[in-house]
Length: 329
Image 1 (cartoon, rainbow, N blue to C red):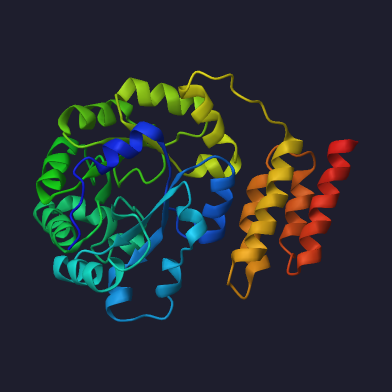
Image 2 (image 1 turned 30 degrees about the vertical axis):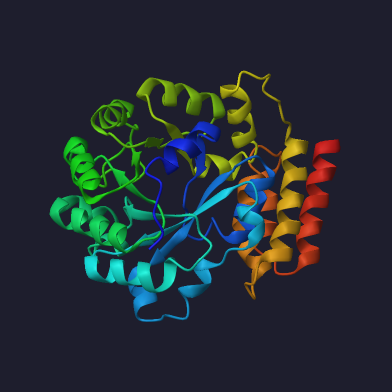
C-alpha cells in the first residue's frame, strides 16, 4: 500500500481553497472539465454506491469516469457512499485504489430519503460507532487520502461528537454542511456550528452550505476559521464563482462578468459536454444546465418552455441564438 502524506490536504489547501461539491447528476466528467476551465482546481465526483460496485451494477461504474485532463494542474476526488464498513473497505481496495482519482470522499451528508432509508448518507450520523467503522475500514484499505462530508447532525446539532468520531476513524479532512439532515436544504445555515466544528477538529475542515457568492464564501471562511470552502449549487448559476473567489482571497481585483459572459461560458460548457459526455441522451442531459444558465435573462419563462423540448444539438444552439437576440435588444 502506498504511504499517504499526512499533510496532503494541508498542502493542497495552501494552493487552492475552493472545492467543487459532489452533486448527483451534475458533477459529471464534462462538468468538472468545464469548471476546470472556469478556475476550479479541486473537484469531487458524483456519489458512487459502494454496493453498486460490490455487486457490479452496470449503472455504477460509468460514474467513476475520469481522464488525464482533469488531473492536469487540478485534483479530483471520488465520493463513495454506503453504511456497511466491510463492503466500503473492500470496494476501496478492489476498485478505487487503482483509479486515477487523487483522494476518496465518504458521503455522510446526503439528506435524500432514498439514501437515508437505506442507512446511508446522513443516516450514519445517528450511529457514530458505525460511522467511525466506515471511515476506519476505508482508511485502512485506501492508498489515497480520505475525506468525509457530514452535516451538523441528524435531528440536532452534535457536530463535536461527529468530528471526534470521524477523526478517530482516520479522516484526513472533513467537510461540514451547516444544517442537520432534518433541515435538508431549508432554513438558515448555522455557520456558528461550522465554527465549532473547526474549533474541535485537528484535521483540515471545509465549510459548506449556501455559499452562492464569492464574497459570501470568503466572509464565511474567515468567520468560521475553515481551511477552505466547498461550493455546490452556487456554481450552477454562477460559473465564475471559483475564479472570483480565487482573485478575492489573493488580494487581486475581482473580475466582473455580465449575462453575455455567462452565456458565452454556457456555450463553452456545451462544447465540452458534447466532446466528453458518453451519455446516449447527452443533449437531454444538458437541459438542466440550460435552466440554470438562463436565470436573469429577460423572458426566461418562454425560453424554459423551449428547453423542455430540446432533444437535438441544433436546438441547443437555437436556444443560445434566441438568448443572443434578447441580450442585444
